Length: 406
Image (cartoon, rainbow, N blue to C red; front, top):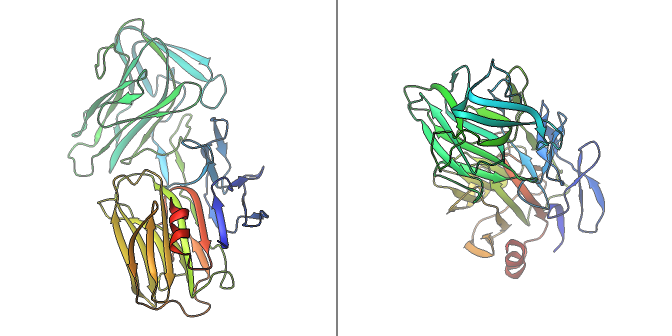
């Protein structure tokens, strides 16, 4: 199976300056041809499982949930909490019957910067002042177990409030909570709510160390380790944004402009990706081979409120082939291939052929000249995780497509 581009599946490579490169089908090491932008620093999880800062303008290969790494692309987000790591800062944190031992253990960065917080009574940790959001709230925080098995996160005073318990022993959360495991016994706990239609979008957030799941009664003597709190005006959390004395915004990321008209085969080929979306939120997310617009394109996309996956071929502004396939969870990695050839179109997902079409034309010579993480004209950017991305310059056989997507 000859391919034009092949990224991922162990072929992602990060040079010392964080510039991406890839290995082609012959094992040749080549620079990544995408025009990548991000006008701020950002964080990633490296191969050792530690968080590290990535300079502005440099893409991120992240190893949060897999060993081979994935390209991480995220929208612009702000950590509204003004001091994300110093829980002794009384301007932003109100501690009731809680004591903090600063820099008591190794943090997710691998440095001695995480705090131990121990209860001296039935108290809590609370954010202050109150925070106002527009769309939703996503509160996340890194927690390492001490002697307290349970942690409860609570939003208060919002129309849509929540009290959600986390069990660190069983690595589980009550409905509405997410627990993610990190190395060195750290977990990232998060709660998220959509408040876009609520009357009251202003409130506080509490943390408790109880003796039962979901309780808001902290027990004296219970303790745990905390690091990296984050509040986003959104319905799902993104990668960690450190703050120290003021809110911080991470800029949106774009990656497009790879290739030219001499590289892509206009008459036949396959666009393949192993991807996951950042959330089940119905946001349009595209990966396309295109003409610098969406007049002519081969597309893979998440679209619609029902977690739909799209395979699409558009020629001269008309959809020649399109397939919408409902999926259970857009945040799970999925393998999808779109084959295009005159009167021979197909979409394969996770080893299964979902649809074929034996009619329709393909592109005039010299039309396709761009591989982009967007809809072809700079919109509907792909925000998600990319384990593998390939462009084949021939229409693969059914057996090859099955093997590729299995």
